[in-house]
Length: 282
Image 1 (tube, rainbow, N blue to C red):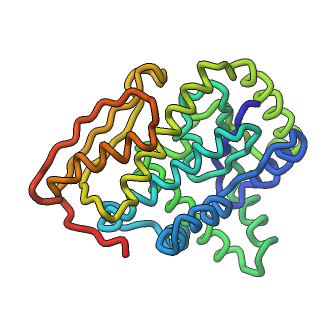
Image 2 (cartoon, rainbow, N blue to C red):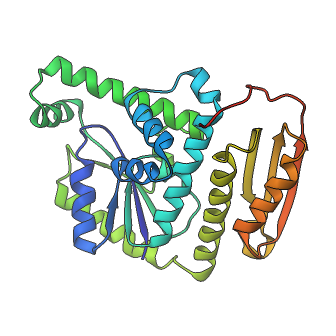
């Protein structure tokens, strides 16, 4: 089945719409809490990092820290894993940007007026209007910066979505029906070629996460991407800079163990000193 990603404003009513679509179609609903719970299974360090990331926007030093890059790689690998399950609604966490170019993914955004958002936030918590507005503006600013840092995209750019809906001018049922129609149209694009391309991107993300979260490697740059339009017969390209002479060969061996029979091309260079210093995952 087609996949749905939803970009949402805090208090915009998107969660109720996403849950309705998921229930009507028998889809699995996945949001930040699901991902952060799953990422905790990778180790206590990542669970702590997920909690910190959820509570504050990373500063410039944190964004350049390799732990942050590894955390993002883990999140992205999880998103691809969810997408491979089929019949999923993925809310937030940048899935809209990460899955761009996958033909059978419907990418939508839910917006609402500030007045309605304040009312929703106040309805969930006993707070006054000014506090609700402050929370909304802070969450919006943090999410906008995070999406720009990670994906280089403006999180509210309508050109990034297949559809933008306003829960203040449209009913929940009307939006849900439009989304379901969109998913039905996207289902026709769920071809073997589309699935092969998605699976290849998922392997690339898995490889990247595995290398970046391995404390035995000292790297300052790593990229793993499909070589040619996501077609498996062309395989993956692995590029990076390492700072231990033995790491290049060890990384190649680990990549091969994950990628299996996929063709692989490596461009891993040795540099004497890491740009941002050594990191310690322990």
